[in-house]
Amino acid sequence: MSEDVLHVAGLTRRFGAVVANDDISLRVRPGEVVGLLGHNGAGKTTLVSQVVGLLRPDAGRITVGDVDAVADPAAARRHAALQPQAQAPIDGLTPRTAIEIAGRLRGLSTRAARAAAEDLAAELDIGPWLDRRALPDGRGLSGGIRRLTAFAMTVVVPTPLLVLDEPTNDIDASRRRLLWEAVRRRGDQGCGVLLVTHNVTEAERIVDELVVLDRGRVVAAGSPGRLRGTQDTDLRLELLLPPDGAAPDATDAPVTVHRTVHVGRRVLLTVPAAEAATAVAWATTLRERSRIEGYALAPATLEDAYLALTAADAAPSGQEPAHV
Ligand SMILES: Nc1ncnc2c1ncn2[C@@H]1O[C@H](COP(=O)(O)OP(=O)(O)OP(=O)(O)O)[C@@H](O)[C@H]1O
Image (tube, rainbow, N blue to C red; front, side, top):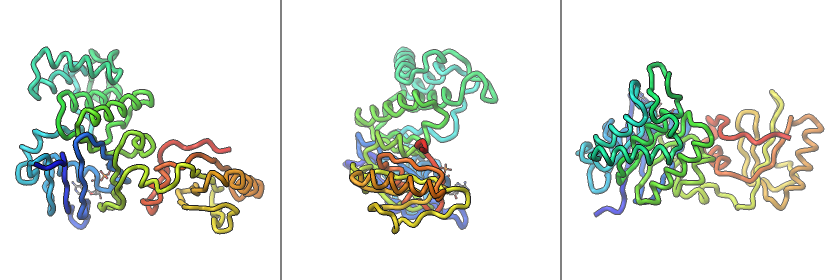
């Protein structure tokens, strides 16, 4: 009996010359939320499509519970639920009907499906939209409510493995918080969760483990604390360069710089909190000399480490601290 709810080993998938997944290995244990991070095109959806049997690997093994998911994808799917990245096709239905149908298809009685829809609507705060019909062309229900409905349809019956591909897309900040809590709760109830997301900052609070993909390969894996690779007392000094301005040389900085990441016009320096005053004085001088347009000092986050790992094609992401 495997203790993993999902075990992926040496997974490789090509599309012509593109190696979308290159020898990927990862595991998800019961009760664990594993975040899968990576830039656009890193190979995340290719990976989850193979886990749920929508795509066949060129090489490697996928085990869901005790089932060989490559040899028997239908059996593996009975242990797993997937919320795909694409919006669920619910035009013509209300969220209540869509969730109840999903429950009935997964074996719930009419009464149990009805109760589950009510419970999930309360958990995700979508009660006011529960009986509003989704219309074609995105009318009737917003993208966020559609996305939350799709999540509810996915979790309406607990499964050992839950695979969520960008579940927070389109969702406003307050309901996003409810969704993150709902994902964490599924883990705490014993479900193994594989969570694809771009939202490093928010995901950090609820995941147990992270796997970072870059160009099809695993470039880092471990707990958020381990991947952050910094002390809790470290700070991020963010410098905003003028257009076409050159980055100040961090080796000339009067502070200890643990890590430097360039993201567009932003330079992110990880510095010890004990040197905060020196860091601010240096940044103020740089601004007075017009070497930078502004700066911000904030606690170091996982996003800094993530950007460092995937810096070559990094783009600004997450919440931007206010510049002073
Ligand atoms: N059906 C396909 N045919 C050809 N190439 C594909 C196909 N699906 C994916 N790819 C390519 O494989 C690579 C990985 O794509 P994938 O969709 O898995 O990335 P992703 O990390 O999920 O990206 P995103 O965050 O944008 O959803 C990309 O280069 C993509 O263009």
